[in-house]
Length: 185
Image: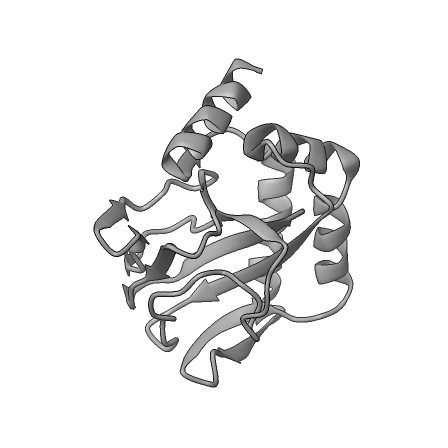
């Protein structure tokens, strides 16, 4: 519980924090099997200006959605964010030199309507080295935070707010694998 309290204080104060040892090993293993099965398709985003490879719709995607919408998972993220969680959406994806990174953005809905998303989480799933793919956060256009590559199984959680943008730079070599969660109130 002390760890969760630390995460909540850091997220509240700084808007971002790195989480370690929060995802169980069996879930990390399950996620890695999805990458081995290659059940992905190229997805164009933001009026076709960026791309990524996302897990195809179907049983694997449904299983992940069900897992992240269990009461115990909602309670975990309620403890970290200090908000009551209604639901969590997820996107399992990877980037290579073939994909085009999304520039600076806020994780609102694609139509930019008012969102119920309060935080996003990125879980590092790359089990082999890659270069590029740097995760960057910019707060109120005056303070840029650069994050070193996370280690396999580490996650970063950050608030979704108007003055809190982020991006991932172009992957230069290797494959950058991630799970993104959008935590909603």
